[in-house]
Image 1 (spheres, rainbow, N blue to C red):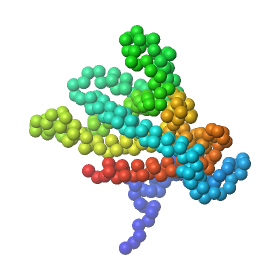
Image 2: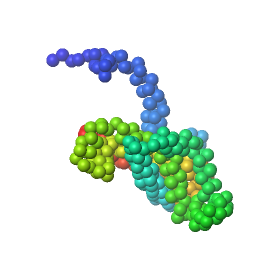
Image 3: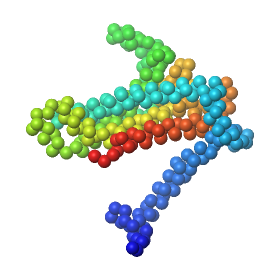
Image 4: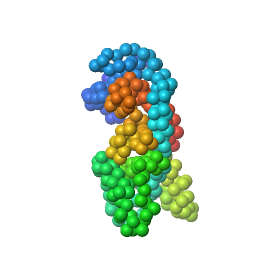
Length: 309
């Protein structure tokens, strides 16, 4: 049997040779700014020192120090636990409310649909440094205390960002408030893509709205829900700006809001107290472990939610 020429191999409605000029720029960009930095960070995790002071090969030494030296191990495990808490709050609040709002927004009898959609999406358009600073003022009892007292809401007067028990939750909820519009709009698009035939058949069978959601809407939007969960997982492990704007890069108070992103910045870029000297090797070791954790979370979720219906 003759071997088919690669030039005649079809992709969509054209040949590979037709599509290749359009793929090469994107491929070059991907390799230069994503694939190569990733591979180079894996290489740097095996070295200590910096380009200015000179690097020396230590193999797995950075990983061993990360888990055995108290200075690094205590901060790493704390940041990892906080990051998972940060993620689960987003998964429950941001994505849960996003699905609820999307269900309401796609209802046939809802009035003012465009107004509600715009209101939910507006926080997404704001800079995180602005929203973080504004929420920092609102959660500061010195600034907001008199206002709450006049409204007889004295129980809200509390140093929310200065209390270790509430700081991480408050930062997480502010982040959920800002990015809820994205998950809502993705769920809206998924729900609107469901054929009306399913709903007509359910109406004939006498199904109530809860049954329609559980047995029709939810199974059909599972791929979108899985993709939103994956994006939430990846973005939360890269979170930095919300903590930086509301607390500081040390994850105040007393590292209660420290995330993997802030830990990586302190160790690999700014230099962690008390040394104060950046350690790129240790920073890339943290990034490498984070990459492996992301793979362990993303791949099973993709397999579970993106399969054939």
